[in-house]
Amino acid sequence: MKQADCYDESNNGVVVMVEPYSQKEQVQQVVLRILDANLDRTREGLRIIEEWCRFGLNNSDFTRECKHLRQEVAKWHTADLRAARDTPGDTGTELTHPQEEQRESIKSLLQANFCRVEEAVRVIEEYGKLYSSGMGKTFKQIRYRVYTLESKLMGFARYQQLLRSHLYLVTSPSENLLETVEAALKGGLTLVQYREKTADDSVRLEQARKLCQLCHAYDALFLVNDRIDLALAVDADGVHLGQQDMPISIARDLLGPYRVIGRSTTNSDEMQRAITEGADYVGVGPVYETPTKEGKPAVGLQYVSYAAKNCPIPWFAIGGIDPNNLNDVVEIGASRVAVVRSIMQAEQPTLVTQYFLSQLHHVQTVNSKSNKSKVYEQS
Picture (spheres, rainbow, N blue to C red):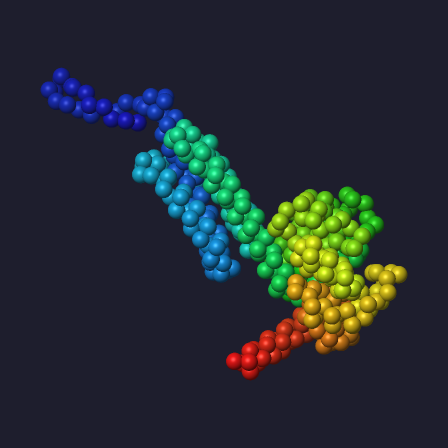
């Protein structure tokens, strides 16, 4: 509504009468409210993401980009847009959804807020064309920058999680697949690979989707063995490739630059080739004979020793490793191990997981103290 001055002859005075907005003015008012609401959403979402970049990741580049985006958005949040706000009359303030009331993990929190920002920026891009000649173009570029930030940030978070992961569970077919994996996750597991060679694709898709959701609920990485299509279908964090699978460069083109790609290796040549091709990590083994790799001879501890001295990227000793021989593998230089039967066939997967992690944590602590001692001696 707007006010208009009118002359009232009955009492020889000027009174203020209220007239309705014209249709054009009503539309414009609605546009202003839409822009105000979505500018608020954008700035709030970016701030939530920025706080994790700053305090959770301690990453100045991501923090700076979030701040710059917020500042650019704020320039468009002008007084006339704020003046159009009508919170009491906004029916949307009472709408909610159960998924908004809880977040399962930091990853789900970040993804929810990226979605919030991207949706809001798209709204601003379209309705902004009715408000200002440059607004639509500006927010189109901001939207692309947010997409890029999301990809880089989630990729960075994945790699940081990979670096922190010292126990790697590779699944095998099981009637209690989900229960076993969740039990291991409860024990502190942070890296899972779904490996299923014989089931129908419909079964694999359903199992992979449930496992991916489960892992992300525990802030764990979820990878798929061999199948890039399956990894993309369930939004997995990456894939693990064998020596006979496609080149890493092609897998990278299909998956994009920010998902994890691992490669199995059995000797130094395969390791160096995987590193050169851009693998994020490698498997080193099989250390001992294992039915999981039937017909493939064990490489023994010598290759583990070589990896400890020469591999510059994360690597996992794998193949027949269990609580009885873990210390032998650790003593030769392994700080990360991958297991299958030791957890998948365990009566108490949670306790076995905790045992593995405690032993691996111990060697990390010893190595850290040793490295500090060497630095002190050299200084």
